[in-house]
Amino acid sequence: MKIMQKILVIGSSNIDLVITSTSLPKPGETVIGDTFLKNPGGKGANQAVAANRLGGNVAFITKVGNDVFGKELKELYKKEGINCHGVMTDNSSRTGVALINVDRSGENFITIYQGANKQLLIDDIINLSSLIDESDIILMQLEIPMDTVNYIIDHAFEKGKKIILNPAPAHPFTDEALSKLFAITPNKTETEQLTGIGIQDERSVLEAASILIKKGVKNVIITLGSQGAYYVNEKEHFLIPAPHVKAVDSTAAGDTFCGAIAAELSRGHEWNEALQFATAASAICVTRMGAQLSIPTEHEVRTFIKNNQ
Ligand code: RIB
Image 1 (cartoon, rainbow, N blue to C red):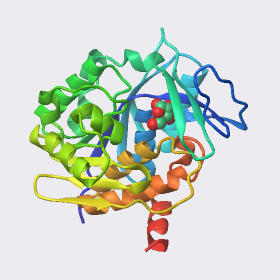
Image 2 (cartoon, rainbow, N blue to C red; image 1 turned 90 degrees about the vertical axis):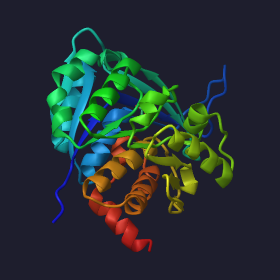
Image 3 (cartoon, rainbow, N blue to C red; image 1 turned 60 degrees about the horizontal axis):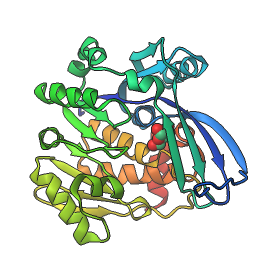
Image 4 (spheres, helix red, strand yellow; image 1 turned 30 degrees about the horizontal axis):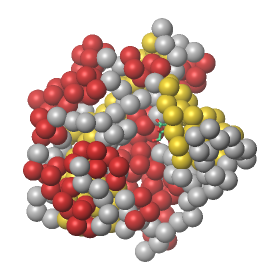
């Protein structure tokens, strides 16, 4: 039997306030919404919850504010069964909040108030470095300060950890940081920001991916929404098409995808298996409203894959 690797997710925690409406508002426009939903979110927390629900052994480093939202989130992470040793409270900040508009096709606009996420600092990571030492896979996104992200990359790389970076929201990166990544999972927009190549077709996907591979990233996974995900390494490349589903809300689909990859790799699976599992997990996620509310369990994903073969 293969030994399960440990996953450490480091990133943001938010409370998401979601309004659905027929269309998304344009600048200066007010639209009347249909439904309102408050649910736990934040790219870091969504990925930690996803990796955990999808069967991974997960620890989470994050910061919440000393308020009702912060207390609520801490309780939820504990209930999920996540190792919460690295879940901290910042007494001088509010918990992060995301205002999300979702339209009839499931597309969204998100505005984030970072709050306590902005206070996740290098000193916090130094204090919690034993969590990095104990883990095998480090999963990160960019809703915390970039200094902290760069410190984690340097430190985790030195310790020989597999770093998976979901470069969202898009932010420029140094070549040195890229060279230390085991995997990167940009969407089309983030790929263009990182490489300067607009993603239109297979050729542009391969061109962009080869730029990242040349910079030293070992595994490049470009997510293409309803078209699936494209995998590229030095030797091979392939597309994993996304299962066809009726999308109601795409929030946290990318986070579910990343958490699923980490969970499946931690069980010793190969990339093609991990990506099939991840595309199925995010396909289920888009059929439901909300961020963490919409993340499936491992059992749901296995059943979905069986029924869609
Ligand atoms: O990726 C989706 C997430 O982005 C939401 O849950 C929201 O909190 C923002 O961080």
